Image (cartoon, rainbow, N blue to C red; front, side, top):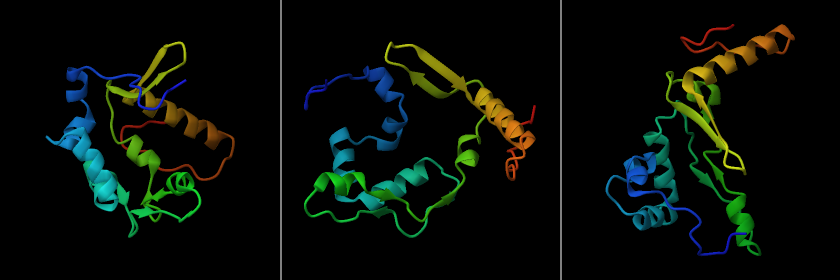
Length: 149
């Protein structure tokens, strides 16, 4: 059970300093970063899109928030970021290669499972091949270096 205000985990200074969030913040405090995200969400999320070097078109609308006068929580959870965006999740996720960590999962027992960029690409290629063999729709063109097994 998480109690509001209770810090459940905090990274070491070294780990925080090596994070992409630290790189994005470029010298401003967490409080300043949070305030910017709240006061200027459209500018904040556009900058996130650019910083992450997403491949695709963000569209005209950065943030759409339906109004729920009686439920501020619903207003937050129903928010849509870049609702007009056009991008390929596969293209964005598979643009990297190499042995570095691409996905990290930690289960409730603390067991850590890691997939490298190369393994992720191999598994996606294998899945695409299996779907093609089953006659499932059009298979997308794979990125350079991502071979079908």
